[in-house]
Structures are given as C-alpha cells and as structure tokens.
Length: 345
Figure 1 (tube, rainbow, N blue to C red):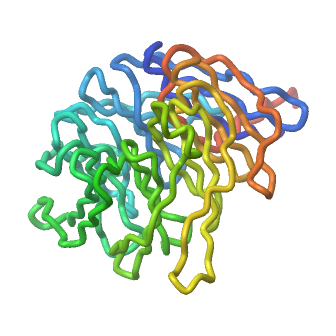
Figure 2: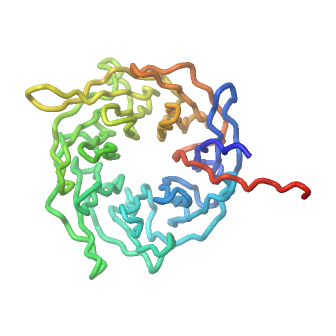
C-alpha cells in the first residue's frame, strides 16, 4: 500500500470535534479524512515525541485528553485527566516525561509526570505571572518559559523532580511596555527564539545560550504601518527554517513572513519581507516542511487554507477545505501506515 500522506489534525472547538485533513499532494485537493467527536471544546494540542500520541486541551471541561494515532490516521481515545484549570496551551518536556499547561484566566501553570505517555499521578498547580499564554521548554538547560501577556514579561521556571515542585529560575525576560507576549518558539537549532506580542503587533527576536537563557535582541512590527491603525492581534509564531519565521495576524488576516538577518555590527535582527493574505481570523497554523506548505486555520471562516510557499517568502494560490465552526489549533503529523490487506494464498 502506498504511504499515507501527512494529516493536519484540527481542533474544531465550535463543533466539539478533531478533524483530520489530508494535505494537498500533487494534483490532489485537500480533503477531510476523519472526524473524531470530542466533548469539552478542544483547543491546544501537542504531539508526543514519538509522533504517535496527540494530547489535546479540553477547555470547556478543564481537562486534557490523549489520543493514539492508529493506522490510517484515525484517533483512538486513550483517556482524559483533570487539568484543574482551563488549559490554553500544552507542552511536553524534552524527555517526554512531563506534560505542562497554563491557564490565562487563572494565572496558573499545571503539570503531571507521564509514564508510557500517560499520567502517572495527579496534576499539580502553581501560581505564575498575570495572564500566562504559553508554556515552552528551552531546548537546553531544563528551563520552562511562560510568556505572561498581562505583564510584558517572559517568566522562567525549573522543576525540582525530587520534590515535584516548580521554582522561579532567575532567567526572566522583560519586553517593551505594551507588548503583551503571547507565544514563544525556539528555532530548530535552539540558538534563537521569537516571541509574538499580541497587544503590541510585534515579533521579538531573542538569543539563547547553552543553558537556555534568553537575551532580547530587538523586534519588528507584524503588519505594515497603516494596518496598525486598525484592530489586529497577532496570535501564533512558527519557524520555517533557521532564518524564516511566520506570524499569524488576526484582523489583518495574514501570515507575516520574517527573515533573521545576520552580519550587522549590532547583531542579528528581524526583517519583515511580506504578508500573505489568508483566511479570516488565522488563530493557529502549522508548517509542513515537505511542501513547503503553510496550513492555516481560519477561526472566523471555519476553513483550513493551504498556502504553497516559495524560496522568496511568497505564496501561490491557496486551496481550502471546510472543517466546521471555530478551528483553533493545527498539528501536522505523519499518519501511521495501514496494514496491507492480504489476498488469497
């Protein structure tokens, strides 16, 4: 049997389901492969380190579910756990032994230990800064970063595994007033990170040392000057490669494309090289490096858009597929192969 194409798993909160969408390949248009009913308004996702398990925040139920990716890409519910809060973002530690999450409205971080990919004990909770919007593990040094939108600061923590406790790490990063940091992503090498500011319409570039400590290098607006006069709230940030960064703009309804520019006496900097029009309300998106494709969820349209990218940061004509009301998160994963059907001997 031919290999199964990568699938985009989409949390459709307005329809209480996770929709698996086949990516466009060659002349084949994108299409819905599977729909998995899920109660509790599914939201944020994180893929297990082996690519075979998907963790999903159930925001309406204050819970987290986990699913196994079965042959052909169907989702098989493994179980659910009480998160103790409304989880807006999920992250796995680099060794895959700890699942973490945060609650924007309750100003808390939660965590649990995993054994064979499943919770091995009750969830723990700790207070954090005002309006945490993401939990992000540094590629080295064991630091957990939490962008706090309500205080223009990226807070830093470490886990004490012996005491099962979370402690401040003295590696916080203060951002310009009015930034409103939302999401943070490290580049594939772990040398750089970018933080998107929801309130300030900006993307900040940060350097990362061998211990995972961050240093602010500077920022750039996510939309052109005239667009800043209208309401716009950038949401997600993704790296395409070590020199290309993408940011979704809700309001401007675009994906901004940035280059990391080296060679200046003042060090690396960001340069916005374009904005790609996309679906209304692009809250979440992912990058398929095999395309390369930008896969964008239009939260206001109920559609997923697939933008083929070129080397100059531009995009070809997108293809789209309807998934349902309020798609809010996308994860691209390689679906396991289905076993071939045996014929008569």
